[in-house]
Structure formats: C-alpha cells, structure tokens
Figure (cartoon, rainbow over the protein chains, first blue to last red):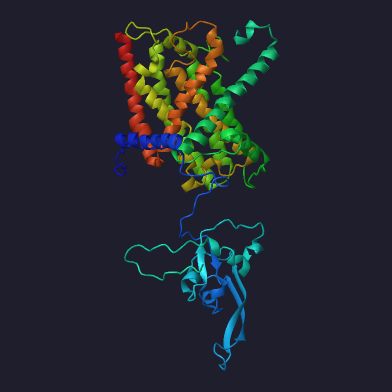
Length: 174
Length: 346
C-alpha cells in the first residue's frame, strides 16, 4: 500500500484556461477564418526559399559532374561529350569544351537535401518554390533537362541572409 | 399504451410497433449524426483552426453519408484465431445497450416509448450492457492490444458507473420519483423559493450532481480525456483494433449515439427535458415541439461534453481510477447526504 502514488487532483484553474484556449480558437476560426486553405481552389504562396523543385540553367552547366557525385541518393544522371570550340583569337588553339547531352534528376529518389545546389560552382542549379509536379506514374518523375529548365523563370531573386551569416550568394541568371 | 399516435387512428399492434421501431431508430441515429457532424467534424476543426470537411455537400454536411458508404464497402475481416461468434456479436451487444437506453427518454407529455416507474434505474442498468459488449470484443479478438483495451474499458466503465448512478440519486431524491416523466414534471411544476417562473431545473440545486454526471458520462463514453481503453499511442485502438468495415462502424455509431443519449439523459434530469418555461407542461403542444426542444438541450449538453473532449489530454490509468474512486464517489456521496438532509428540512 505504501507504493501508491500521491493523489493527483486536477488543477482547476489550468483546466478552465485550457477550455478558454479552445473556445477562443473556435471563435477566431469562425470570425476571422482558419489557418488552413482549401488547397486545390486556394493556393498558399510558398516562402521564397521554399525547396519545391530543383531547376537547371543549362547554359551555365559544364557537365563537371560535381552535383552527381555529391548527391547522396545518386539521383542525378549526367552525360556529356567533349568538342573543340573555335579559338578566341585568330591563329589561336581550338578550345576544348564540354557539351551537356543529358541532365536528369529522378525526383522519385531525390530527398530535397539541396547539396547539388550548394556544390554547383557555375550557378547552374537553383531551388524553385514550385511544388505541383506529381505524376500518376513514378517513372515520369525522372525529369530531363528541358523539363528541369522550364522552372528557371519561377526562381525568385536572391533573398538576403540574416545578419552575420556568410554563405554563397547565388546570382540568378536572367 | 397511449402515445402521440393515438390521436389519429386506432392502429394495430404490429403497426404501432413498427412505427415505434422506426421512430426509435430515428431517435438514436438523428442525434448521433447531428453530434458527429456538428461537433466531431466541425467544432473540433474550428477549435484547431481548420475548416473540417467542406467537399461533400454544402459545408461538408453530407460527409457522414460518405463515411458510412466507405465503411460499408470495406471487407469484414475476422482474425484467424478470433472467437468468431463472440467477435461478430460484440458490436451488436454494444448497440443494443444504446437502443435500450433511448427507450426511457420522454420527448413530450405523451410522446414516449415506455413509461415505467423505475425509468432512470432501467436506463442506468441497460447502459452497463455495453461493458459486456466491449469485454467480448476485447477478449474475442485474440489480440493483446484488444485484450488490454477491453480490460481497461471494463475497469473504467465499472469505476465510473458508480458516480454516474450516485449523481443521479440526488435528482431522484429531490424529484421523489424514479420515473423519468415524473422527474421532468417535477422540474416543470417546481418552484424556486415560491417562484415558479422557470420551474425548477435541477441543474440549479444539483449543480454538483450535474458536474459529476458529465465527468462520469465522459468516462462512460471512453472519450478523451478518459480514452485509456482506446489510447492510440499505446494500444492501437484498444478493443476496436481488429474490427473493420461494418462492425467498426457499429462501434462508432454506438459511441456517438450513446453520447447523444447520455446528453439527452443529462438534459432530462438536470435541464428540464422537453419542457420550456412559459407553456403549460400538460399541453399537447409539447408533443409536437418537445422533441425539438429536447434536441436543442441535447446539443447544449453535448457541446460541453465535446468541448472537454477536444481540450484535455489523456489521463494516466492510475490517475483515471483515482479520480473516480477518491474524488467523484466521495463527492457524489456527500451530495446525496446533503440533498437528503435538505429534502427533509424543507
């Protein structure tokens, strides 16, 4: 009998306060509307730095493969070939350049970590807040470079970081 | 056997019985549906700053039909090791308790199902049948979660049956009758210190009884904060774990229909039932508007019950039992003693 815990009486002021919170929330919802929206009809504006989808600015990509190698899920597929570009000055040596043949991201595998966007040294990858790209077939989530490029125009301008933080500042190519 | 029906034509016994059955079904399902839509779907959502169902019908009012349709489509799965007959019968036992409860509640001076002298005693007795159904469900499912849930439910329902009965005793002492119709009449014709303007609804004199009754009802319905038997974070959904489709739906209907009927019982015992002040309690008008008045009072009481439900987190098992045995039962006993003394004095 000695092990019986002490009788815990309900704390009445706290109980009444709790009732007040739910009642207040109900009145606010009825008068000022809810915090949620009815999604397919009403769309919330995502925050500017929302991680919706990764988009590719193809002109900046040099097929350096850094993003593909850093990707934890191995969801980026890159194929390219070398070609000789004409020399800059007359009489010069032809320059060797990389051409991008294939740049696919499998969003069925992607875990939205953003490492590819971080490591890209040529500012070819960006976050776009777009999120409505679900597909009936999972294979259709493998997006090729033309599909990845179409979100480029939805990339917002760079938002200033909080004071004191120093990080890479992306210049969105317009 | 007179009722609201006798003013029209003399009906055969089978006709009367079938009308009573239909009206009884309506009296169980209509308040249950109203409560589920108004409180479970809408009020709960508003209290969580969301809208709740909005697609099915205007403001989601047909959502309940959609839910019922969904449950009816589902496969009726019975676990291999389950005690098949007991498993199948359990939801019906719970539902029978609900349907028997509605019988004693009058909706007008002549609009009632049965008029027995021990009405309130009968109501509290048949409300205990659901314990058997829940124990059957818990035991027959052959699942440890169901068994734990069933045992918790049994312990809880037995513990809270006592304050429920004892809280009603105060009303019975004051009204001087166990007959539910008599209790309504005692409130309708009662006087507060010689002033009979609003009758004497027992919530004024028996406020402690009303509070204890509401807490005990909350526990009887195994609703939060007394939802240890279906504590989903510990034992899945307790005795409901193995149930699917129609049988789960029956348990669901049983829970909310019982919520409606216990609200009606509270409205009848403490708020004056079908009576509103200003009209002669014996007038025939109450046979027509009585059910609507009763439904209004049911919604009022159910608002309180569901408000508590959506506000408070779950009791721990030992706290739950302590509240019943160490707080509610002594309080209700004191209430009975006090009521008895005052009854003798005045």
